[in-house]
Length: 318
Image (cartoon, rainbow, N blue to C red; front, side, top):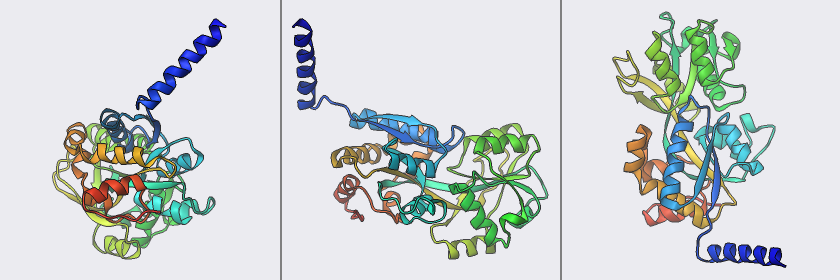
């Protein structure tokens, strides 16, 4: 009898806390490799969401955009950072999602920052994308966002996967392989500065190769989700001039089944605290209502849409 009474008291306490709003939502956020920007920035966002919205966010390292979309679809994650182009592939069932088909289990919270396509090398003979012919080049995991970015850019320069000696490596493995002389160049798609490139430029004579001119023009004409971008001088050790490249957009997505109130509070926690996030991570400086809502081809979550409407911006929902 005492045991039953004790159980009833515990249940009463739980229900009392829930009724008073004492219950805490917990979410898991899929990010990327520990050497990329997603992981570190995701940690900053998670801390801000917890402190401002009272929602606990468990940030985990993953294989990146596709893994995060599939993780949300499987119910393993509730939040994820993704490339805007990969997000579009998942929604439409194209390219890396041809096998899975269209997925509608996720929605957008907002765009975060520019993800620069960074072509890094230690070979002074490589000065353009065209110079990658017959070279050992890391182009990301097969079917990943980085992989398709690399394929798009090679094609714009008149090359194909068969014209290079492709290596399918993570950011950290690419940096190690460059340092050890095992590859000649690597495509890394992430917010600059990227930890893997920072470490490489600090310890070795590495530099960024421009993606510009007719290559960039053809790329942006064929694939409108790419835009021109300049990586400022001094972003990396030894970088004395700005480097022109192209970019896609890092975007925060959420499970379509998340409550409107929770997603509203998450969106508010991020975009009402841009200064605090920027103080913790340089990429926070790119947060804005405009950047969050422009150029997004996948529907927003109703909770995010509610927040942006309060700021005078109407976004598409489903």
